[in-house]
Length: 465
Image (tube, rainbow, N blue to C red; front, side):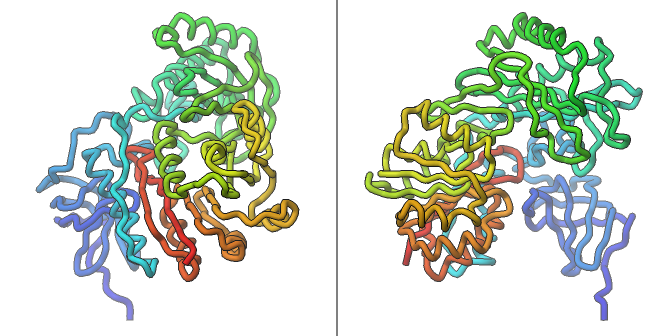
């Protein structure tokens, strides 16, 4: 017999918010039935409108705050509720750090045998303008005028951005300059519905320490009309700007062709229109080369903290063989290289491996080797060919976590320690659960890489039992 749903769609209710969920949404209950309320904070009493019901839960729209949480702050962004880029802007920063710690703790209580106490989240001193990479879609606005901005949450409607609090201001400034040029030169912009139009995205990457800027124009084609005129104009306007006076310089401009009907922003073909096609940045004492297709951590200052914590957990003595799985452009392997005998890195993205080799060369590191391929496919071969028995394994997988094959391989290798760096605590806890029989979870440290968003990175120390 189906349980009767105690609320009705389009009706108003008064609820108390009992907790916050994984996305920062408020959670209320009526007769044991769960209601999710976007923008509500634990402890608040709210008047809500039910907008959708399912057999297990409902979604409510916040109409009125009857009792406010002391953690509620005045929002400093006009578009944050629509864009979804940072969904926690209405909550005091310290409280968001506690929420992230609790989120990881709840996952551990649900999934792991060892109910280890999660450390307090390491936050940023200045949690603003921290992103070194921006990806702005282009499209047509209400009056068929070209616009640039960010996608509205869960849709592909473009919202023009104004003073984004998490992007580096250089990115927004550059995107607006290009928008002016698009209008001036009458360049068509891409329309998702028809697949027609030329300019799809503006991607900006910034070396936060070096102040070098890469600008990528993603086009639905091969030819960009007036491309040299546009390049000259971007450089001229940038050179005359206040931003240039702060030391920022455009080091390279790239045309990227992406003619597929896809959510993937960059295509595989790059043409350098200006400069040499890459920028450099520094993490700790090391220099890294960043190309258009390579992954580089979006918040470098917190990345340093994350990596230092990972290396501290590894407690390296100088003679270890370190395996760095999902190594990207080699950042953490290079970070650890001076403290071990040898590092082996594996990564599936060919361009990232090229960059990793180059980064080792730039930093004069000779005790590191990189292999291109899927971790699950080539790990066994690497172990046999190199005849190694790694004592330490670092894993930094994508959001989907480790696959069963990789977990099995790590369990077979029996390294003394596994350092798991994760951008998704849910898959991290699932993977640790598969390893708990052989490995003891010693410490879990959340790091706030994306302030005011619901994301949290963790570094976890696992020791062989």
